Image (cartoon, rainbow, N blue to C red; front, side, top):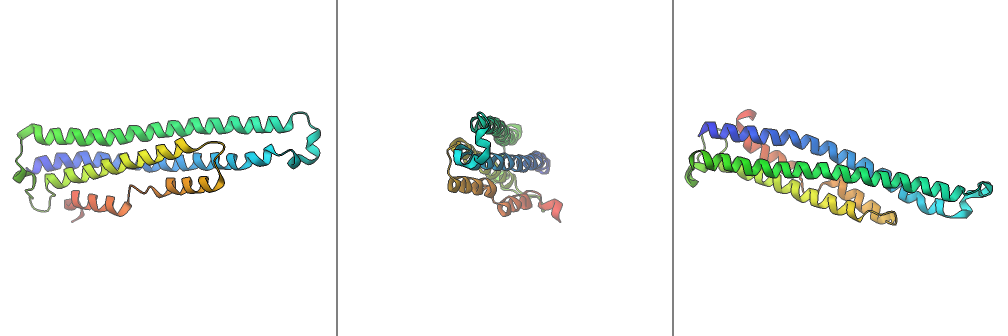
Amino acid sequence: MEAVVRKVQQRVRKVREEMERWDDLNARLLTQFSNAAIIIGRLPVLGDAKNYGVLRCVPNIREDLLGKQMESLELIFVLMRGTLEEFSGLAKGFSKALVNTKQMVRGGSALTAKQMQLQVGILPTIADCLDGLQKLSDMHQAEYAVKSSIISLLTWKSSSSDLAAMRQLIVDQPNIPKDEVQSIFDIIFADEIC
């Protein structure tokens, strides 16, 4: 039983390492979103001819500046979609780790429900590990869905209040509460804490 728990812990450890990548991706997405928001915020100013003063005499200045900003914005949108693809890959990886771990536990020795709840010393139960892994997978799937929805709503016409609300949702990661994640790891890796 101890050997199975150790194998499950090892798989959860790999998921924990991938969660660091998730945090890096979130920082990248936030930077990309902030850059897009800055451009979106300046588009109305650039679009208004009265803001050009003496520069109005430069041929096509307004159209050229707007065109360059739109090109930059489109590039940022492409980069954000790429970042979302990486989020998707991680979320799918967490789900796959869960499925593979469940198959490993059930396939090897067909454990009974009582054995799944059996605790050896300070090691977690197999059920605790699988439940924790399930919660982590669900949290990341839900957070990916939120991020994907937010980015799909972002357009060059987004208002400043919409941008502020979207940014806050990206920053908050509302489906991945840090204290709950830590409590899951505290249960699964209780033997390492002591």
